[in-house]
Image (cartoon, rainbow, N blue to C red; front, side, top):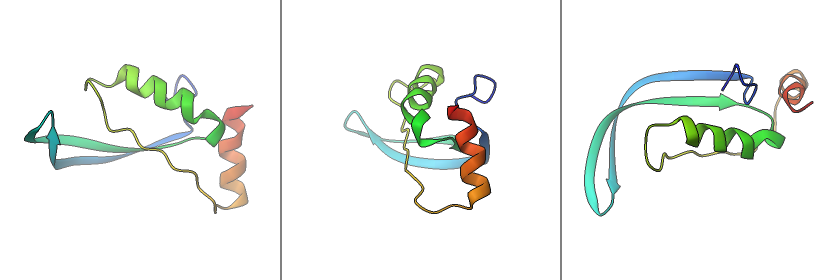
Length: 82
């Protein structure tokens, strides 16, 4: 994701124990959470590529727009979209 310039940064949160419902059954797994930082203009491209790379059939990929950030952070992320 970083080398392909879909994101500017990845924060790898480490191992976590996940409990979930999938296909009508309760499940649990050890997973690793990651926060990817990118420009909003690249959301669709980044989400699509992450879905291709992820081993799950339907990974939980969530995105949200940041409505408040330092000008330096906004400029850094905007560089990706240029």
